[in-house]
Image (cartoon, rainbow, N blue to C red; front, side, top):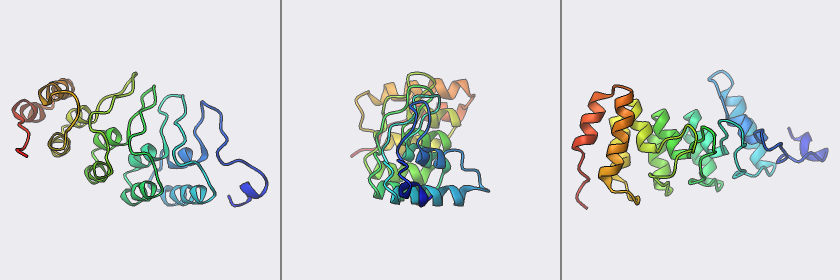
Length: 191
């Protein structure tokens, strides 16, 4: 990989429908190859890869941070945030996610907490096609702990009753009855 810049290769070059090398290194990191892919991703950043490059315009486009969140690697998410990754980069148009939406959908509670500490927007707009808000993703997975974290920290423009009502629809589609009960009875903490 170190030969790329020495030979004049631009590590940020890509076709708009393709991932950047960094995004590709972070996507689909199965357990067997995770260490190698994360090592490659670190090296690409050291070589000057744009950490906040826009996701591909193809299906499932992800920024580096959004892709890293989906791996569930807490330390790498912290590393990217420390390197300046944009916590509120918008979701790609086709089945995209924000970093917080990815954490909620994948049920990565600790990563969601870290993202919230870095100012992640709880009610960020979902991908226009195939997307959902973070709370909706938690609801459809039945993750009451995630839903509570998001609702307790909610400061978005929609009334909390509307947020819960939207999430109930996702919970109902997946037969998440305990989640529906939780959302229907939720009251924000007194501040």
